[in-house]
Length: 287
Image (cartoon, rainbow, N blue to C red; front, side, top):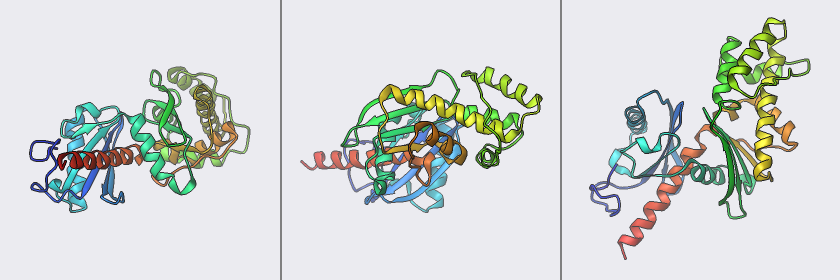
């Protein structure tokens, strides 16, 4: 989206410029957050990414604007982020998901204090980000070569157990026995292991708990590479899973803070960066 065909020259002629958008184009889901000049969220939405990144992202964005009755020309600046950020040509600019995630986490967790460690689980990757005292990224590590420990891993588990991903947390809570050990770190081998454990008569509840602890242990190992400090902020779609939260807190031996909408944090950060960038460009244009 361009302002008078020139995103580097902010002007009030094309619209009121009251809003800023962050669009997180993930491997499985498109997340959009719209904020106003006071950084308040005025709209947000999630759509499946599908195979047509640009087409689906544009449709999701236009649908959100129509639903909250905001003109596209009232959106001052749009930043894309995430896996498909370079494929959405209607954005004014793009930012890495690491930077956007940090910005969004600082805002979402402001009431709890300073975020020092971010754990983010996406559809096909897993990140641990360390922040300094000013909330800036000082180190990070990620696993994007294998789906183990990601949203895909949870989807595979749910599929084999013939349940929805959203049901995994409640299933974990019903476990009475010791969580089963999942030894495989590869999703393909883990799937075979899960099928074998089911065939041997093990309970679904203990198996789900075992999967969650397997993911939590993987996260813990990644976190040790960058160093883990409180406050720990957990986001991404899988952070909606209460069983995974419990396993993660046990493995890390500390509480984690989860925002109300954990899947939207990175899109929120992109929107905040869009607002900051627009203000900078406007000031520069005005001399």
